[in-house]
Amino acid sequence: MKSKSYIGLSFIVLVFGIIFIPKIIERIKNNTVVQGDRIDAISNHKNPETGLRKIGPAPKWELTDQNGIKITNETYKGKVYLVEFFFTTCPSICPIMNRNMVDIQNVFFGNPNFGIASISINPEHDTSAILKEHAQKLGVKSSNWHLLTGDKDYIFNIANKGFNLYAGENKNVNGGFEHSGLFALIDKNGNIRCREDDFGNPILYYDGLEKKGVKAITEDIKKLLNE
Image (cartoon, rainbow, N blue to C red):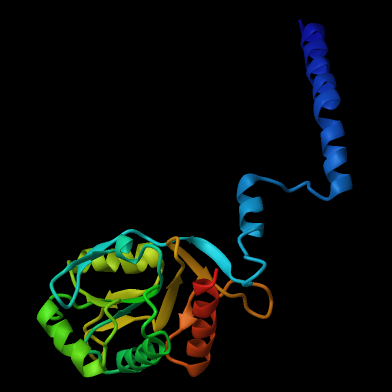
């Protein structure tokens, strides 16, 4: 019985060698030992013309804007748009983010293919009426800039799981909420896009607080509008 088992095992090893070893040798020669659909897709995610990386599809969502109108991710289909998470009573970073977003709006004002989605993380306070008043104070004039409200848990899920842009409630911080100061850039096909850092790594999101980040995202919006 043992001799038969050894014969069977030897036969399997022989078949493996005949079929697979030549393929492995060929991959070594071509430097393609590590290969697969996912790896290939990641390596080809950068557009050679714009230099921008494609991170993946933005999450689907449905919320209500400052005019009481239902807005979804499909509203922005065919448009390049930005996403930010904020709240109107924010005492720290939101005013800076909002001012920078106004500057970006003004650069592209009149272009029907550009939009902005500002999603409140304090929707219980930030009703459509409050958001409309806030929009007027900010100087929102683009019909494609929607300040959005909805269910709080739903919004937190979009921020934290959909975009991976942190948002949370914290009674120990000034204002009661905390969130990132980052902007997400979405292309006409609904994909999250970004540039690379000096080491070739995707930055994922853009700094919405620093002028350097605003300059970078403005440049990349122009690239995507022409893509």
